[in-house]
Image 1 (cartoon, rainbow, N blue to C red):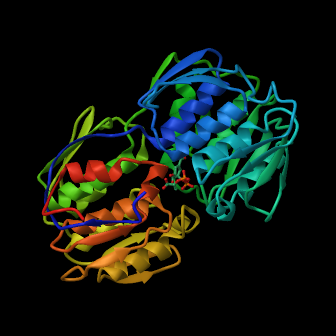
Image 2: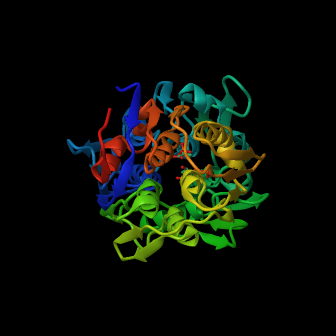
Length: 434
Ligand SMILES: O=C(O)C1=C[C@@H](OP(=O)(O)O)[C@@H](O)[C@H](O)C1
Ligand SMILES: C=C(OP(=O)(O)O)C(=O)O
């Protein structure tokens, strides 16, 4: 694995990229297929670390599946209910830093009583809060205990989720609500979930609700403030399930075209995609890019980019791409309502501010916002990536200038996009690569 990758200046960026499968959809599809009655053939599954952690967890739980050699097709033999029905011994599941594995699995393993299952992960996972979810699971009757620090993984689960009247704090992560929603239909009782505080990252709940419906279960959604779910139900396999392309991964290519295009087409997502991160294209358009929407693609072309002032709470992952695109815009950019950047792969507000300053930007890091004034000339810099795939991918955009950039630990993109730099360079015209 390379320690660092230097990207020399890229003068032109154009072409087509067939997006890898969505991380959010891949991990939801695997879990719903494992819980469902029947076999599900998942296609365009993402082949990346986060998905491998989910697959490995399912293996440990004795869920049977057949994975193709390129790891993008998976036939899952559903358990038809709880995942712990064959468990006789304590188990340990190591989930790396995959939020989409840790949070939904924590809820899934509460569905029946069983010997203890330890859910753990890499050091950063132990700093990412899970207390709001654990509080709700305990409220629903489950036995869940903290093994190290209260409020954080690792956690030990012995099950007992019965559903009923629940509240969940929505202010830190939508993944807690996603986890509860996906498990509630399998509980004995009907469940009502009331959200405390303002729900963040709301469009991810639309992914959850749409996928639950594709697996046969509908939820009553009262304006994202209260949800009603009938108990005693079962998921049924849709047979085949095609995973949409990853809209967050698309953001780097769409932004690169806006900066140095050429025309870029990303395929595998389109105007009807369920992922909220397709709305990144609207933000880019507001900055001045030319965007074209198709059923199965989005295209982006260069424009005279100008800074924006926007609340990007609805697209927290793709919002990071706006922060580095801002380096190429006329005037400052302010991105607000992004407090939960601080509890993701790293403290992304701190990391982003620190690295943007290295390339010459003037940056104000607020508690829940970032204000970026671009420099007239970017400075050559070595970018630290903080074991955060999105830091590596965002800062590749710096090379779309007359300045080289070195990305430390480029292999960290394996969390969601192992082939990112290969794909990025295949659309780039540049002098040479060191
Ligand atoms: O539900 C999901 O698939 C996700 C929800 C978001 O997290 P938060 O809800 O914690 O913001 C997002 O950042 C993450 O990459 C994936
Ligand atoms: C926040 C992210 O991941 P996770 O699913 O681990 O929360 C991300 O991919 O940017």
